[in-house]
Image (cartoon, rainbow, N blue to C red; front, side, top):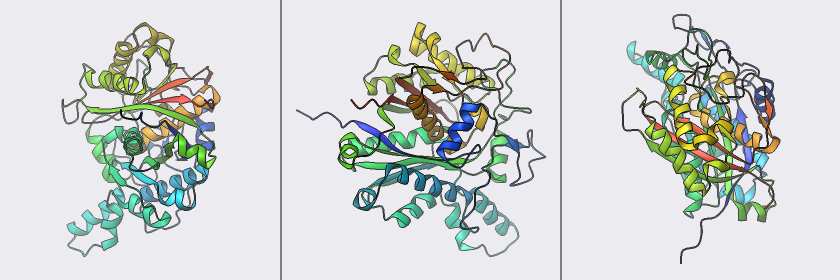
Length: 399
């Protein structure tokens, strides 16, 4: 008879975000309802529909020649490793799964510009643009010998990275893994995102009737996932338990959302089934909440389909209302926020919420943080092209 899969826990957290360069700053900003969106300085955004975004601020670049994306990722990894108190063989044996939508795309711009002008490109530009650059750099810096993976699953990337790490541990490939997502704001990525016509001309208003689109940002979020047994042997402090996750794809359209919400419904149900819990066991949902007219309406309908009448009792929040959409980092940063909610009993607000929408009629914790007894939470992430991921996290009570 097969042995049951190991219980999995989160022992380390790291965050580089538009509202702070540590988990403490990130969390304080969310709880205070502070908007981190401001005029973009990395490039001239004035020709676009919105010249504002969520840039990482006050971050000293150790290597000015390396991509900001990679350096955000390495800084968040360093925080998570320190938080988990990982060292020696326990660290070296860890796996690593990182996800990014654009890699070091600023260096990709340099490659394209050199080609356009018939110039010889610097070989390092390709190294920095490479989507695997952060994983390679982390393996070298910390001597990691466990399994490695780089994912790029659009806006579902950050949650999917944690889910992939969970599977690596469940399948016996490693006892623990570093997992997260990262991205940088650059002209090449921003112009591509602008072409999707999803950017709001004013500010991001998830679930509000007057919402007109999303805003884009940068950063990195990283967690350390490990088996409960290994965490207890190490005497590690435990932030939360990972009960289950799921990933799927709508197989619908390259960019347009499937208005039926079938994929989103299936991924939430899949995560709950994997966790072995009922919808009525959940108290909180950290929503994808992009502020686009379609996404918020579809996500609301999907939550109702999964939770039925219980949907109206859920405390739902959209961190993007304060951070903007941090692309590959979004799902991991929002998972970290969900973990902090489980630890503190505080649900951050959905800010810029002014006008209720009859089609988005659930409790989105408008404008002010709220204290809630949250024991079980679901974090959602959905991507352009129909990629979907969800994770179920539980409050750790030493059981």
